[in-house]
Amino acid sequence: MDYQDIFSLARERPRMLGLDGSFVTAAAFVGGCDAGNSWRLLDGFSEWLAVELGDGANLSWQALVIRHALPDGPGRSPSGPLDGEDNSMAVETLFRLLEEFWDIRERDGLSVIFARHSDAFGNPAR
Image (cartoon, rainbow, N blue to C red; front, side, top):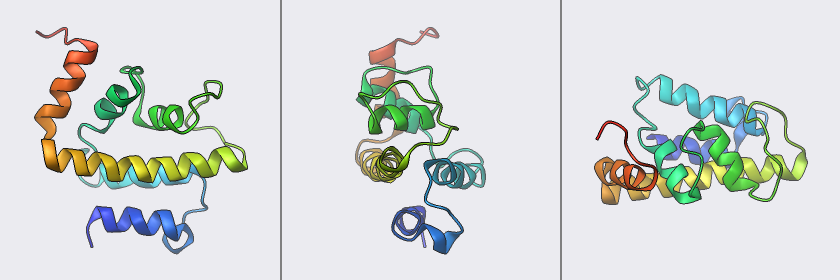
């Protein structure tokens, strides 16, 4: 079973993996999978999210997912609880964005994702 399959299971049957259906636990689960892969599993995810959003290059991927999920909502902490519909939207958005990201990362490669981020937000190292 690969991580795309694991995240599909987390999306469809969170309780099977010990998750309570909240965005906070889903994000912690995804973060734990990343940690278990020496922080390489989500390489480029924050950068891709920021480029897609056109803002937020200084934010965590969790905060960027919240911004994608609730673009008209007030700024919210990614570690704080979300109400029913907002929570469902954030969880669904997290797993949808992960799918999109992996498809793009596989198709274009990380170097393209990082180059787009650099073009959009600048790179002080250049």
